[in-house]
Image (cartoon, rainbow, N blue to C red; front, side):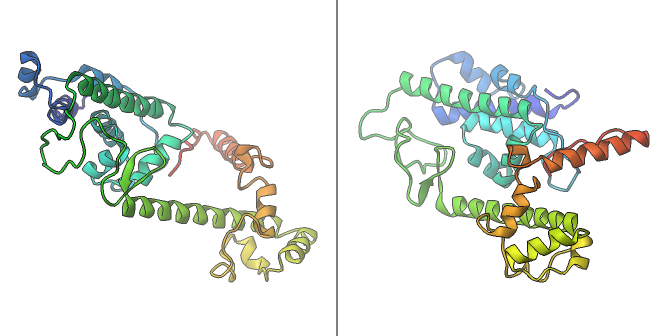
Amino acid sequence: MAPGNSRFPIWISFASRSWMQESQMADAPAAQEAQHDPETPDPEVEALLNFDPVPRQREVEGGWTPELQREFIARLAVHGSPQKACEEMGKNRTGVTKLYRSPFGASFRVAWDGAVALARGRRAADAKAQPVKPGTRPPTIDHRRKRPWDDESAPLPGQVMNEDGEWEDEDSYRERAEEAQDSIAGKLLRIRRLYLAEISDCPGKRAAFEILTELPVDWDIAARGEPQPFQPWVKTNQRQPDMILTAESGWSFGEAGYGPDRKAALRRDIDEHRAEEGLPPVVWAES
């Protein structure tokens, strides 16, 4: 748990109480007593919060601060659903997915996986201890549950299966997919500009690019790393020559072994230059 952060003992207590309410735990006086004690922590949830937060390249309003990362893990340990945890926090799931996939997110991923395992383990244990009779539904806080607690195979109306094997509202699922597509397209456009800037001073490469792609490149604009006039109507497509050449250069998928890892080389050059200036290396993380 983060030193000096007094918010979390109370939050963990909330998480514990929320879990007991959802799972209808009423078999032990001690558990009932802990449910009403706002200072009683949940040791298993508390242990999950002792991870290294994913470093952020820059601080932005509403960003995933270390405190919010720990709150997400605590909520995830209660529900086992990343989508529901984000909805409770009023956050977009795309951002926390970037944290999970960050090269500096190993500790966060361990906490995430542990939180999901804890929630599912408790849910399974409670379902086994209190089996639901056929044709009955357990009471819930919001009275909106449409299926028995131990039947998670059936979706609610308007839900689809997402990439985590969870049922999610179809509108939410489609919105996240569109956001991911837009994000990927934007990155590929910037990568293509990098490649054009790189070859802008080589007449042979410029001619080859124009012949293969049949695109009217303004090489003065390319040298400055600015968007080309054709960008609004020529979108990124990995099957077209312009993006195949970009990928072969190593700017697109070099970290995956497709061409040389140009981004890694650029980062090393920047860090070496900063070292010569007596500056610390850059903390390279997903923005």
